[in-house]
Length: 397
Image (cartoon, rainbow, N blue to C red):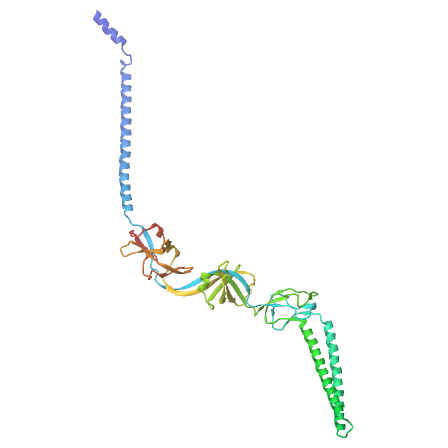
């Protein structure tokens, strides 16, 4: 009886849920589902690790392949060509021969001005006139004095001729003849004096006309009707002789040393796209000690676009040489001087020292160090080193 009681007590003290078959089945299902999720997560992580390992190996292989590949550089064989050197300069435009014109006579009040700036005039043409009413009356008086002197000369000549006829008869002495001869000579001299005075008044009147000393273009007019002028009035007109113009360019002493008279130049006025052909006709014999520059004068033919006082740019030819020509990007420099990188037959970089010459808009002339057949690195030379292997790609110009 006691045995049976202990069994019953144990059964009564156990978990009632454990004794339920349905509850036990649900618990097993949850455990199974948890195991499936854990296995799936582990499999996914393994797949990720495998994918990373495979792609990492491929990237390392590509990196190793690229690290062993030589850099590609662009090269050029410059050859040899005729190179025309150009010197760029700035300066002002001016009349090549500017003629200042003023009042040459005694002056007076300007009665008329006959020309305007920009007008062409010929040599001797009247530019302005000064009132001459007083001088005209003085000339008329001088003309009357000539007539008086001529009348006195005719009377003296007649008296002398009559005396010469009577001297042989003894009515007139030789002394009287000499006196009459002197009177005749004095009368003729007074005629010449009167003529000279008349000519002087005529010259004075002509000098009241302000005339052009040479043919050319009127640049400036500084006189108006009614203005009082004299020989001290200064410049009244400015004329460009023949209309010829020039450019006054300032160049450094180094550029001046390479120039000679007669070389051609192309001048472009500021604000204009038209280019004018000129010629260097004068080079300054002195250098300004302050600016270290000298003046070059470029002769130009007349054109309406060339206005004195305006600003212009010029390209002056400075000689021709036969040499290789390289772009500026191919020429490097350091403390040792200028140099280029060339690609040798073994496709390795070689440094070559060069001497540069004329600088043009197309590049730099190489006067020493290259014969023109080398393969010269065009750009990125600063990132290369002598002895480095490269892949050369030839570029044609």
